[in-house]
Amino acid sequence: MANIKSAKKRIKVIATKTARNKAIKSKIKTLVKKVEVAITAGDKAAASAALVVATSEISKAASKGVFHKNTASRKISRLSKAVNAMA
Image 1 (cartoon, rainbow, N blue to C red):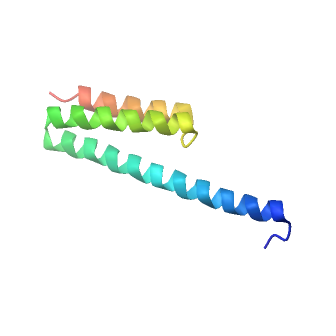
Image 2: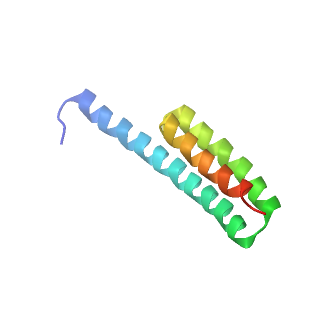
């Protein structure tokens, strides 16, 4: 355990940031699953609506530094490609 005050503060700050990042990543996983479920169900309208929400959240996460910008771009691209491939 840290003895220095600044080190103790860093531990608290890192714990807070980690919790926030985990919550955001979990939320994005849920949104991605909603898009995938709509795709497997064959519901193009629901998939498109879910895609808009997921894209927005992934972009926000990237801008906040939760995801690297290339990772966010890749996730959005793959989801969009899957929705567009629906007949």
